[in-house]
Image 1 (cartoon, rainbow, N blue to C red):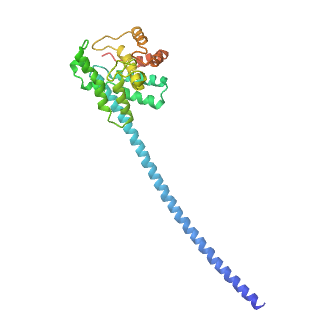
Image 2: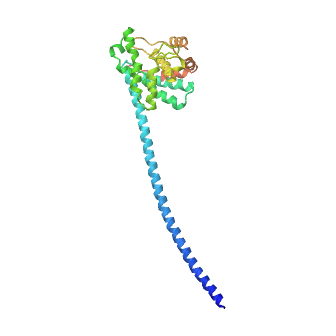
Length: 265
């Protein structure tokens, strides 16, 4: 074997040794990196799981807050009605009627639900009206009528400052449910579709229930008289489209009324 061959073999052996060392080093580095990645993955997974738990806690808390808010809104509405000797079933019926009107009018489902939950607050301003006027067993004189009509403005002022969508909707309902489609309502005298749809819907829902119920100042009307009045007030007091919806789905409105009758004491 020549000297050059020996040198080549030596270089090959050195290359083999160096290659082995390099491969071993790379292998150790890869194993170490894998362990680091595994620890990192576990840490990230743990952090992710903890974040998901926190997000779920926030969702649960938010749902609880919304449920509490709905309950408070309904209770406040019932309190407002109880001042004028109304039962809690009045606001329940108005809520259900409002949902039906909103649904058949074509509002999104979430908005229908929003109006249903907000409508019990339509008369919340009555909490500020003196009992002597609120429960007077007879017609109001001019001064008394002016006082009773302030409840719409009062209710609006109570609610308008909230940024909560539900309370914003309730403020609209409280403010506009005594407006009339042809004008002449209160507190603004707004006409037609300038009246918010929430106000137009609650107006009809509230009047339907009020006319069919005994009040301190009147006995309940029979259905024939109520229906005649609605037809006469179509396009005057009430949005004509809503009056049409009422008669087109009359069975459903009557079913709500029957299912939520006031209990005889």
